[in-house]
Image (spheres, helix red, strand yellow):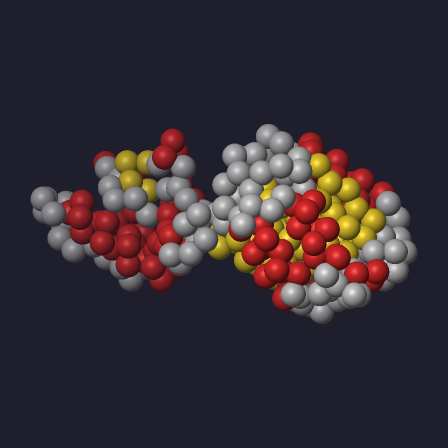
Length: 286
């Protein structure tokens, strides 16, 4: 009823799952992941216990193929199950029970596994595999995962149609404010084109919560500082003081902090400088 990819970044720091299905809120059932440990997708009459059980096995150092073997062996309903697992290192692993609805199957390789059931055909998994491997130079791991999912969707996907999609990515300290390991957790629960909608959400997520690129940061001085000050004032966040005030730089930072907090862009702030993403958003609004 579903197609998915579970994967690990080349440096081993990120793990994730991208999934789509003709099933309500597939993100609530299929994906599981833990930073420094691995990722798992359980589908086709999904056994939700696979997620905690599989991650526990990975945490103790069990390799992905052995995790899959252990989960399947302990499950009397394994004939109708499908699961994909990736660990902290080594090859990914996938399993498709003989009782899964056609077409059903999967493929796996170093750091990835793709699987699906009730698909239009094996070309869906081939497309996911090819897109994943072709994206090796993509610097943004969530984007690479989504591109693989999109390729499967375009190749036919779930033969019953489309309904939901999800993207889960974890890495150490990757969450909001560094307070969790969940870098991305996006779900489209019921939509006529869920994979496209998931892409739109990922773009917004990247704009709001992506980390600024040090190479592109602009100094808040001279004409640029004057422009930012003017635009912040127009938006109701005027910096204190005037052009002769020696505290103007810190006042500008404070005003920018105030405005960015309202716009949910606080993760992109750097004192004394401005991220072009933040500047573009400021210009669009003022």
